[in-house]
Amino acid sequence: MTKLVAKLRTNAAAYNAKIAGTLYLPFAERRLARGEPVRGGELATADDGKIYRIEAQPERVLEVRCAQPRHAAVIGYLLGSGHVAVQFGEAFVRAAYLPELEALAAKLGLEASVLEAPFEPELGAEAPHHHHHHDHDHGHGH
View 1: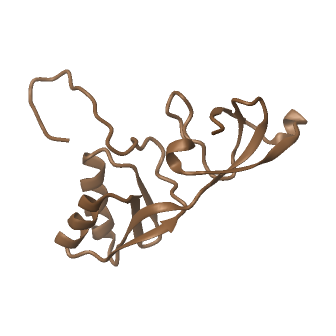
View 2 (view 1 turned 90 degrees about the horizontal axis):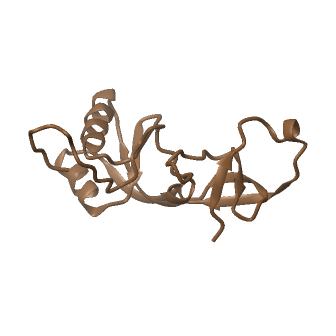
């Protein structure tokens, strides 16, 4: 498996670099060691020393259709408070597929589908199942 090392911060022509090819990777594999995501269409160096164009590989996602902006706000809030990476699109919200998310959408009465699609979560999104410790004195579930 090729591991991404760094993003190119400008276009390939500025580097006068040869692009070795295109890597189609799921979201979890399009993150640098420090957690920074590499978006579809960006260029990155890999651990083999070559430069690749990176594209989002279709992966299993839950897509919640949002007929009203309020639906997107509610599902986005609930997923975000659980530190689930989400992608907002025109009338939909996507998250990596988890059965409990599908059940949550059904409970809220929202139309949800499981599909294979490119997953490009919003910047700053945490990886699914991210756990962390708080420095304050109250508890809350994650």
